[in-house]
Length: 101
Image 1 (cartoon, rainbow, N blue to C red):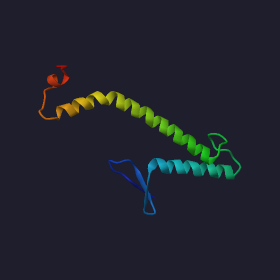
Image 2: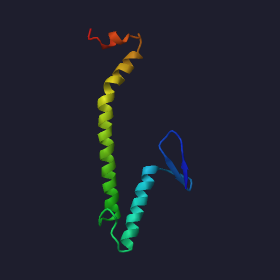
Image 3: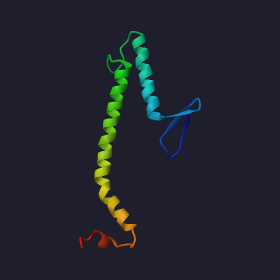
């Protein structure tokens, strides 16, 4: 495996295929759960199947992503509107852009 480092999200390459790092972690956790169940031991989290564990991880990550997206949209909308207004033609001053008239 080769871990490439750049400004983009981490990508792991295996056998000429590229996978996002979170997918590799999810697959590794699934394999660990399957291996533990084959040996007759329960996974560390609980006695759940590999598919149930993967589904729970997907739910947790999607919930986390939606909560953070909501915060970014909430605090970023007004600054985005101001930025777009400042770059339009004719170029208004900040006072003209923020005044209601």
